[in-house]
Structures are given as structure tokens and as C-alpha cells.
Length: 398
Image (tube, rainbow, N blue to C red):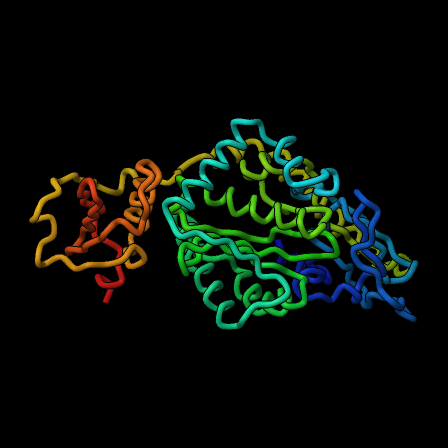
């Protein structure tokens, strides 16, 4: 779709222009949060001779419908809008505090589950949460982004996506550090020791926080790590006085649980009304987009039937054997390794699940590698983990 729009029009993505590139003054006089009426952006001086230029229509994609805007393109333009994808958000300004948000959004059972997972996570691992906002060292930034890429590639692979990574990731890496330093973005990281295990990139417009993308180490899934990281960010948003946390595009179950408001994204087709060619071209693009999204929404329910397939299959990809704890527990041919050196995501997840069930501290466990298996020695028992097939380790790939 983006390639076609680039051919047929002057295509600009709202999020890239406003949040990543920070070129808001190229198009807008002001941007306002319609929920509160507060301005998120206002240009100091309007353009003297505003004109978007050329006869090709301008197409603005990914425009959130809850944001009111005024374009700085003059008065001789026509704007046509089409609803595209659903979005969701939390109206933070509707709650007095983070605690009130939790009480109104989740029942007692849900809140207790979050607290239990947080407590178990802290009990089993050396956990700390850090939000980088206003300052961040470049070396630390590179470490975090490398971890982000690795975790995202793993999760894409688990979901069977061939691309392996988000195509926008290189642009995020290039621009985000300076945005963090200027308080126009924040990076949320949960660490186990010095290792990032959950990361989210969030971009800021006025008092609106946009949750662009997030990932976490699936080995820690039993602890609801993704939910814990999100709750950390939401609490931080309340503490910093933000008005909206926007989950943006995508229909995921966690968004429906945490969000309190849904909204549609818009495509805006803009063209010059005095030029006959511009009007015809603009109308054609607008009706083409309108037809495309009519068909999309009409067939959406049919397509969704086939999406609930192929969940994580780690239980089918690993064997676990229990042995006695005695003087011969560790053989001379077994090499001591630490948890982060275990490259199999299935074995890492099985070990984390063990910590969750037994309330076992990771630091109390010892790991030994022999060919295609990992031996875990605790104070009570010995478990041997083996993947059904060759282990995906750095050592085996060298």
C-alpha cells in the first residue's frame, strides 16, 4: 500500500513526520488533544505563502482521529478522510491516579495476579526497571537496542514471520537516542542483572505518549513480563503528568484489557481545489482508498478466523529428564555455563517456568552443557533439558 501511495501521491505518514522526524511545522499550524482540548503542538509563525505544491494529491496516513489538527497549507484545499485501522488508548487524564486506573480497569483477581507475578519475578531474579527519559549514554543505548533487535527477531521467528525484524527498526535506532535526550521519547527497560529482558520504545507529542513498539524475552512469559513492563510505563505516565497513553494500531488481547477507549485511524487525501487536474486526481485517489478499506473491513471477520493458529510450541520441542542428586551429578565432560549462554529459547523458557513453579532463585541454580543438552542442578534435584533436534547454540554454529 505504501509503495502505491508513493507513486500516486505525495505520501506522508503522520507518525513518522510528527514523532520520529519532528518536522511537524512542515504541515501543521497546531495539533490538539480532543479529549482535553490542550494543545500538543503550535507553530510560532504560519507560512507566508502556504501551498503543498504540485498537482499530485497529498495523502496523510496513520492520523489518529482523536487528534484535532489545522494544516498550514492555505485555504484553497479540499480534505477527504477515510477510516482505516482501529486504535486504542488510555485516557490517563480521566483518572486521579495510577491506583484508581487499576481499580477501575481490573478486578481484584486481576490486580492480585499482577502483584503475584511482580513479586515472583523479583524473588527469582535480580530485577530492576529503568526508564530513559532526558538522558542516556550512547554505549548504554547501543546495548539496549542490540538486545531489542535480538528479542524481536526471536519473537518474529516464533510467530512464523519471515521478515525477522520490524522494517522500521533501523530508523528507530537512528533517531531515538536524540529524542530521548530531548524528552520527545522514552525507552523502558526491565533488566535481569545487566541483561535487558523487556524493552519498549515510546514517542511523545505534548502530553501524549505513543507506545510504538515493544518486545520481551519469551523465556520469562510465565511471569507476565509484558504486562509488568506495560504497567511500569503506565505508572510512569501518571507520575509525569501525561494525558494519554496511545497503544496505536493493532488488535491484540492485551490492548483490549488495558485500554479504555477505541478510535479509528484516518487517511486524509488533500488536493488543490482550483486546479481541474488536481481535483480529478485527488477524487480518484480518495475513492480508490475508500473502496479498498470498504473491502478490507467487509472481509476482516473472514480473515480473522485463520489468525488464531500456531501458538508457542515450546512444550513439544523439549524433553525434560529428572535424575538423582548425588556425588556423580556433574560429569568431567560437562562444561559449566551461565543462563545467558544457553541459546535455546525453549530451554531458557523451561528453566524460567521452573523458577516460577518452585519459587526458585535463578542465582541458586547451576547449569552444565554437554553436546545437545543442558543439565540444571538445584539444591533439591537435577533436571536435564534437551531439544528435539540439534540445539541452536553459538558453540554449535561455530
